[in-house]
Length: 251
Image (cartoon, rainbow, N blue to C red; front, side, top):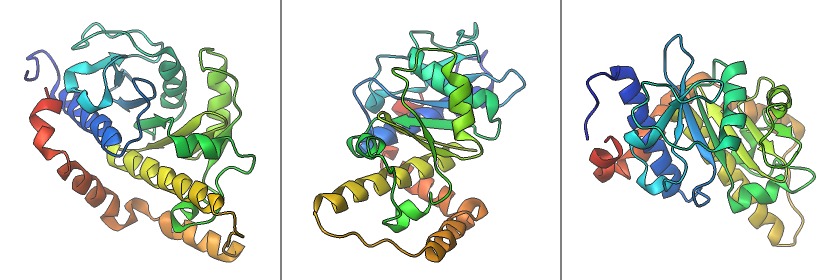
């Protein structure tokens, strides 16, 4: 199915890009049945954002499966395809979209490694180069139960601060960025860092942690704007892995 004639081109392109991100999240095995969620703000003064129609497998997400909602969780009348939206997804994502206009895309996952690190008192340890990307740049939010309360939004935003990634304790991971490519880069590195930590700890031997100086230096190296174009190159390379599905996800 092609773009409806009444839909702005920018919304359709946002839908296609977000649907591709859902499929890549599945490709890299970061899904949890129909739970977890990814959102993308549609450019414009209305501050609307897209979220998945609850019940669709990430592997099969299409542009038409995404629901356009406002910051109050109401489905926008011009939405291409309405449907049920996960309440917890709305609570978490609307809070950040409202408070952080610089973060256009937000990804939340419940991977085994992510949940395992979220359950550890010390959180993510500076054990690997992937983990050092987040050294001094990672927030934590204390678990309050399933995110169904509007009151939790203020605490989520306060805990996130100026960071782009956060560990939701006893829950999972959250990563974001100014673009789909940037958000994907954040969650990919955070997930890999968690996987490496759990595997390293399972060996039952002493762990090697770099010096404070090296940790800070490495984090600063990662913090270059756009990392010299690597983020966009990585996104395009990842998309090539599912390019044979393009006609389906953009429908």
